[in-house]
Image 1 (cartoon, helix red, strand yellow):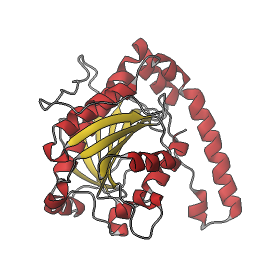
Image 2 (spheres, one colour; image 1 turned 90 degrees about the horizontal axis):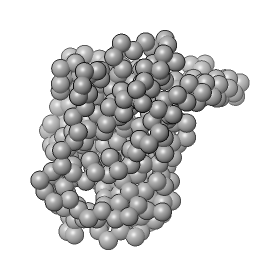
Image 3 (cartoon, one colour; image 1 turned 120 degrees about the vertical axis):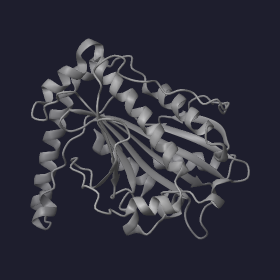
Length: 323
């Protein structure tokens, strides 16, 4: 379940709470910090082997002001929802047999970063080990003073009406902060750059009150719509990553100010609408992460997706997947 993946993500990025609250300004890269001697290795993390369902987390405990009884109620509700979601998603998983997200994420990431010349990408590798100890080991073995870590996840929303592709992008220093333990490098306050990006691609004519019907629609024709939505979500994450890497402090400061922008009406996305990058799509600034969420409806007319194009810049050598 996606709740377990998020627990691991918290170990790796320790502070996915509001950037403004934490006071860490690392959602953009200053010009003087863009170039590092020796360039940067890239580590891509895809910890899952199949699409995962999401659930709406019960939060009775917080609403009631705490207490063990309410915590037990929350746990029971969430477990029941998780079991139901795992049953509902079975036809979609069967339709997506043979759909290999990993090489797509690896190829798209390599093309995106190769087009960012100042990043000076060196070797790139993909791992399935999403644990914090594995990332610490990768840092210890790095041949560059910084590495770019790209963690991908792909899932449905709780109603199965949308495919969600997420990208957590971090620059992590190899050097351990003075007087700290090695895993301190993963704390948000020590990350030179940290941005959380999401793409939500909704099913045309989706019914949020009919999860099974949505799964049936996604699964039809060998999962054609689901495959297209995940591929499109991956493409959108690349576009958002390119934009994030190019942001200046002044541009990000302007984004952080609401300035009468409409509030987001997307469930579980707290923030405001920034723009419409494409017809029928909305880009939202997520104030909980300081990142971006792009929401759109899948174009059901073929071709449903435009494949990411490789950069003209030569790609960095790709290593064998990490064990």
